[in-house]
Image 1 (cartoon, rainbow, N blue to C red):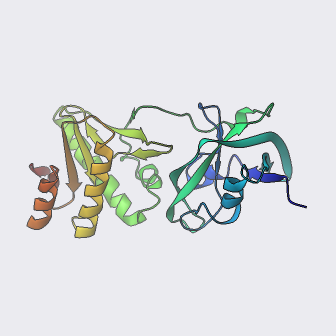
Image 2: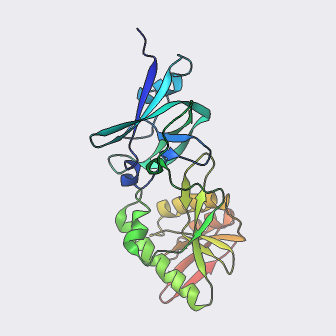
Image 3: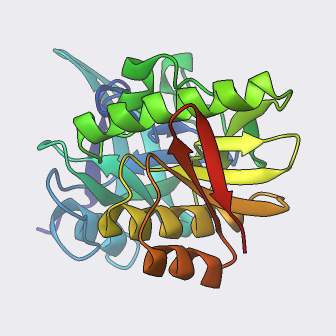
Length: 264
């Protein structure tokens, strides 16, 4: 006899332990559920993810339970929404950043809605946040996919640069940017006086510069700005400066007690 249901067990605190909380009720009226797979990028066509994607075709009802310790609560029956899922970033059990599937589930009839099942507040537009580089531990915790020593150096660089700007009457913030489909990305610095978007890196080595360029180009798609720049602890090589200029990205580097700049 074929199973008539697909059972999903959600834990409202599980994602928070890894720095995210996609699971839960969202403003679109659907219950979001992070897919199966604890290591590496999650696949649609293996394990529980495949069972969930096949549920409608096989005539199976999706039944969701909240599991907390020894207590399990039935929330109700659901079906995949349209669109059925989006991709987001999250840490795996080994502490590596990877791409996860977040399924969107529409309730079928009456379901249990509890405040403990609410997800993080959705935002439709970028939100301004304070630059928190002065709190190195908090800054480092928001970049779990990068080496901690490098992130700490980056945080201190950001703190010195924003203080240097502040002394010149230029206020700075950072942004929490919602991305299409779900999830967020966080910028490093936005200079409100010049409307410049800045990504900081802990080193002027090629791998860091290439990564930083990719990040600032990604952020720039979602934020209004007049210019963009890469902030580095020392002057990079001439060919890397040429690379940044080619993509209309300035480079700012620390030079003793001041900061120098090369613009496109």
